[in-house]
Image (cartoon, rainbow, N blue to C red):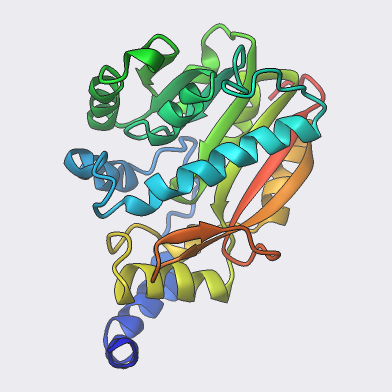
Length: 285
């Protein structure tokens, strides 16, 4: 059956995907790059999922099953940076974290459950409303979570708190301008603190596995979730962060198996990857 699906795919949607994702969409982008990081179509697309966001067996099950790996990546990064996690039950107790692009709060709540004080921001009013309602169901963490409907640009312009980390997970591949987006994320943390990013590498492997297989053959996530031309290689993310006074400390591969819907940590970064950087200097960005 899988073989038949592959054949059908390459005879059908494959051509349109290659046409749209590898050529057409790229040719049609505006010549002048936007100064905002918001991709309004991406915001609308994800907002439409508000009623299924917290269905752990639903269309975005992959985000839910990704949570343990993402949280472990944050903990490992902090440990590698010399932070001592004192409480085994609440290892991130006392840490102030901003999650940029929190959606309906899956990772925000996960970070709060391991002790962090988390502010989740997102451009989607619908998803922030869902996040606010869902966190009320767990009084053990509701006091540690704050949601704000805003853009990263507007949030970065407000008076700063002393945040220990910025986390942006599965967001960079959806923004209109990754360089501006990362610049604004850097503004939020003080020198010596951490930035954690998970996103998707721009490789042929990521096209075939993340879009062709995951979206079209296995249907593990909704079709149209990703655009290959917006994926970004880790060395490019590293270079952007270096321009804003940040040093990359760790790049780790992450892999999603669309057949089993399970995550693992491979030795390569050919598809999903996590990047941890430290902001060393205060810049004028």
